[in-house]
Amino acid sequence: MLEKIKSFKIGFIPLPLYLVLLLGYILLTVTKTVPTNDMLASLGIMTVFAYLLEEIGKRIPVLNSLGGKVLVVTFLPAYFVYAGWLPKSTITSVSNFMEDNNFLMFFITLLVVGSIASMNRKTLIKATSRIIVILILCDVIGSLVGTGIGMVFGLSAWKAYFFIVAPIMAGGVGEGAMPLSLGYAAVLTATGAGNVFGEILPAVMLGSLVAVVLSGLMKKIGDVHPELTGNGKLIDGADDELESLKGKSSEVSIEKTLIAGILAITLYFLAVWLNFVIQKYVGVAVPAPIILLIVLMAAKMLGYIPNNIEQGGNSLYGFTVKGITPPLLFGVGVASTDWNKLIQVFKSPASMIAIAATVIAIVITAFIAAKLLGLYPVDTAIAVSCCSGQGGTGALAILAAGDRMELMPFAQVAVRLGGAMTVTFAIFLMGILVH
Image 1 (spheres, one colour):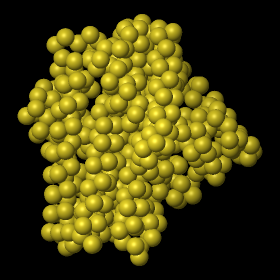
Image 2 (image 1 turned 135 degrees about the vertical axis):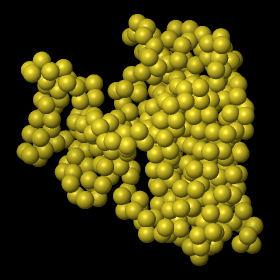
Image 3 (image 1 turned 120 degrees about the horizontal axis):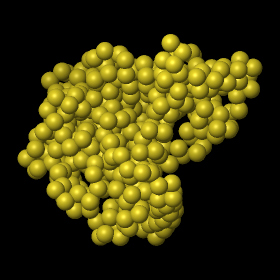
C-alpha cells in the first residue's frame, strides 16, 4: 500500500513531494506570508493547483475526451476567482507574475523555436503555403456561415458579423478585440472604444471555449481514425530528418537544449528591436511574435538551422510542453479569463448559436480543405481553429486540448495572419457601410 502511494503522481510530481509542496502553500496562505512579487512563490502556487486540476480533468468521463483537462485547468480557476474561492494572496501573486513577466511570450517563444527548429525543412515549406490558403478559406466561409446563422436566429447582419463573427476571428484580445474595438469606435464616433470592447469580448471568450472543445473532439476522431492524423504533423514527409517530436526516446543533451534556448532569446531580442525600427520609420507596429516567427521560419526553410540546434529544439519543446503548459494555463485562468464576461453571452441564445456555428464552420472547412490539399485533416483543423481563440492564450488551450502542441508555429500563423486579415477587413467594411 505504501509503495503504491509512493508511486502515485500528480502530473509528473510524486505524491509525497506534492503533499509537502501543498503543505508549504497552505502554511504560507494561512499565516498570510505569501510573497506577491516573487517568481518562485508564484510558480509554486501555479504548480500546486495546475497539476491537481489537470488530474481531475483527465478523470471526468466524456469531458476528458473533449479537452477536459484544459477546460478544468483554465476555466475552473476563472470561476474560483469570480466566486471568491481563491485566497486574495494567491490571485495577486499569480496575476502579478503573469502581467509583469510576460510569461506567455516566454512560453510561446520557447515552444515556437523548439518546434520549428526540430521540424523537417521541406515539410515546413509545403505545409506553410497550404495552411495560408486554408486560413483564407476558413475566414471567408466562417464569416458567411456565422453571419447567416445569426440572421436566421434573429440577429441583424450588422450585429452578427461585426460584434460576433469578426471578434471571434480577430486573433485574440490584445491584438484582436482591442484594435477592432478602437477601429469600430473611430468609425462610430459616438461610441467609446471601452463600450465596444465590452460588447465584443464575450464572443471572443466563448469562441475560444468552443474551439477548445472541438479540438478535443478532433483528437478523438484522430484516435479512432489514425489515417486522418499525423499526430502533430500537418503533412507526411517520407524523408523526415527527425522523427515526430512525440514519443521520441533519444538522449537529452543539456548543452544542446540550452543552445536552443539561447537561440530563442536571441531571436526575441531581434524581434523586439525590429518592431521598434519598423514602428519608428514605417509607422506600423508589427508584433514581436510575428517577426520572430517569420525570421525563424525563413532561417529553417533556407537551411540555416544547424543540426545541434535541431536536436536541442526537440528537447526544448518537450520541456516546455511538460513543465510549463499546465501552470501557464492556470495562470491564464486566474489572470486573463474574466468569468463575468464569459457568462454574459449565455444570456443570448442567438449569439451563442452564431458563435458555435462560426467556429464549427472554421473547423469543418479546415478539415475538408486539408484533405483536398494533402494535409492531415485532424491536425490542420486543430491548428487553424486557433484563429478563433483568445490569441496566444487561446492557442495554448486549443492545442493542449488536442494534444498537438507541436503545431504552435502554425497556430501562430492562424492567430496573427488570420487576425490581421479579419481586423483590417472588418474595420474597412464598417467604414464603407457607415459612410
